[in-house]
Length: 169
Length: 252
Image 1 (cartoon, helix red, strand yellow):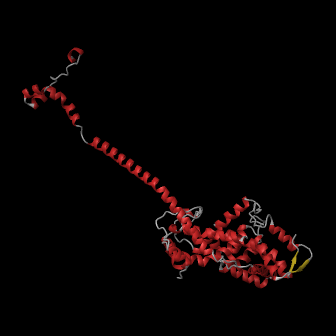
Image 2 (cartoon, helix red, strand yellow):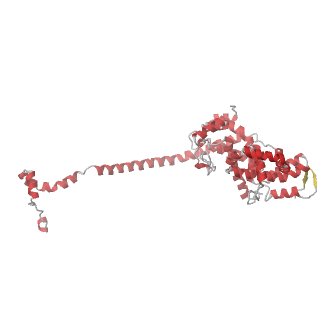
Image 3 (cartoon, chains in turn green, purple):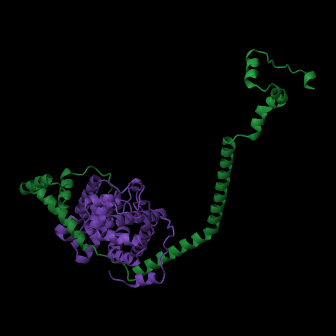
């Protein structure tokens, strides 16, 4: 028989739980009241209990004399095998750790390089920006007055020379 | 706490602290020993409650700290109870001892992850139930035991039906003696399916409550209530005729 057999009788469910001391107080009282008045119910309880008590006939087995000793030996052996496997794996793990460390360091260096490069101004950039001034530095020094130059620019007197193939050469 | 050969054995061979014990096969509460429980988080309050109320939990916590004498003590306390349950489950003495050792091996391997979320006995018998179940399934696959689809016991398909038929038959009867009675009870228990048998054994021999059995077998308390009621009904139907008449029908 399995757990999918036809529905259990509600009385059986209740009586077994009662015999196992698993009923709440009010349920227990209900069962006990019924046991006092219902003979069939009472007989069913006795039959269930009788079969349960018959299980006391079952032998009580014990572990063998060497059980504890062989169990400990088995555990110790399992531990040694574990340790051997761990030690065999150690060089591989160590290589993985070194490789991981190197990769980490390289990645950190690369990130640092990029960060520093981005944050610091490039020297040449400044020079490129100042090139137009440098090309005409002699002329600007002869004027000697920055405000005067700005005034000339605002008056539209500084015109970009058109670059032609002839002028470029 | 008494010491003995086991502690002495370990004295000459220090437990290797720091080795990462691989916990195999038994997902559970250490917390790796059941698929269901692996997601549970045991609160400090719960752990403390079990630590304070259960002396075996305190021993296991010492085992967690690599106390060999504590492990020896736990083994001595539980080995007979464990082998008894397993013996009635698998009906094979040698196999029961092998399975008992497997249970203790798993307990030892799980020690570093142990957190008390239940009584120690509940945890131990949960492991035992799992180990026994796996063993019975392996036997079934090797066709050494003819298990029906409903996971009947080692007596073959529909043993309960056979016993019920014998008990209710009108075959000629004879008086039975105590040893036959014992054999009959053993057969009646063996005729239950594996789950019913486990629930009965835990209830009868370990005096476990429905809640503890439920936790051990990973079922609800209501399911255990039904399981035990059905098991006891089956036992009653088989055993009762022998009790009332003291006579044994011939079993076909």
